[in-house]
Structures are given as C-alpha cells and as structure tokens.
Length: 239
Image (cartoon, rainbow, N blue to C red):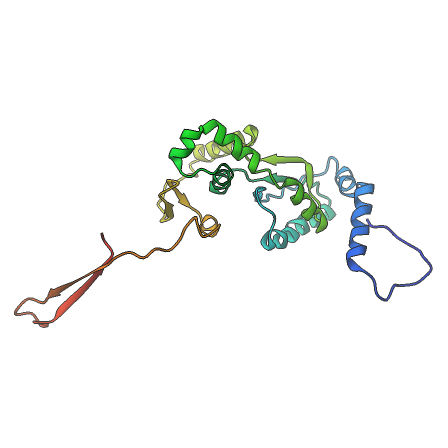
C-alpha cells in the first residue's frame, strides 16, 4: 500500500510529513494502487456510495475538503469488508450558481439580456464555465489522499444522467411515493426562481437585506368596552 524503505539510518527524528505524504501519493500513482483495489474485487458484491457532486466553476473550500475525508473513509472500509466500491467523481452543473457565473463572464444580467444574447449561446457558456476548475479539483482531492475515479467521471448535464434522474422519479411516482406539498422559500425576482440556502450565501449581490417603509396605525377601543379609550397599535410593512 505504500513504499517501504530500508535505509539503515533508523527513524528520522525530524521527518517532513508533507514529503512523506507526497512520496506515498507518488507510489500510489505509479503502482495504480487504487485501480488494483478495484480489480481485486472483480465479481464481488457491489457497494454503492452516493456522493453529492460539487460545482467545478470554483475552487474547493474547507467544507469540501473536510467532508471529503468522510467520503473517502466509508468506501475504503467497505472495500476492506470485501465489497467492490467504484468511486466515480461527479460534477454538479445545474442551478443558479452556473448561470450567475456565466452572466459575470459575459457581462450581462437578467432574463431579457440573456434572451437578447441568445439562450443557446448562453447555455454553451454555462457548459464550459461549470468545468473551469476540474484540473485544480483533481489536484486538491488527490493531494488529500482521497481515492476516486476522475477518468470515468460523470456530469449532471450529460443526457444519460438527466434521463436516469427522470426515470427514477417516474418509478417513484408509479409506486405512489411522490406527494405535493408547500414550502416557504426565498425568491429572487431578478432570476424569477426560488433560492436555496446555499445560493443565499453565494455573495452579497445574490440576496441582500433592504430597508422598507412601514406604517403604524392606531385603533381606539370602542365605548362601553373594558379598555375604553385605549388605543391599539398595528404595525405593518404592507406597501
């Protein structure tokens, strides 16, 4: 699993841990250790590990790297138990972040400008921008010693992937497992779409606090009532 050395010099009292890590990573790459761990399980029972894919139009942050260790530990453990665990890396290419980044690159804003520019051309820009940092992601993830298959990755914009999601939803609907409900969500009037919690935190331009005028109305209690002469105040932000 890792290079063994017999230098005869004993244990280095002041090792460079980054250098040790890099030497192990180099050995894994030359030895194809990850690929060998899959080949050893050919024909074994499969364990599927579902991993929510990240966007590739930005560099990984602390949250990505921290959860990456847990996402690496579970498949390794199941592999040690004898399962075959293929770990295809995926890319999330849908949603408002992709569109906002494309607008920034093109210097346009809003639905009318997108339609004027051309929806087909705008979608093409989205497709190219969402995969902008794939090489850097591969470097980061590999450096943290996470075993995943980047060469056989998937993208949510791929037609087979999209069709598989629609198929799964159809099967759930046929089994009566889909229901309709209501949920209060933040709404972007510019984009004409609800916003997720993640999208609210993307940057200061996506969702920001604003100060509205308010009205306070007084209602005097009618005569003959217990609190006659008392005024009730009603505060409202209704325009």
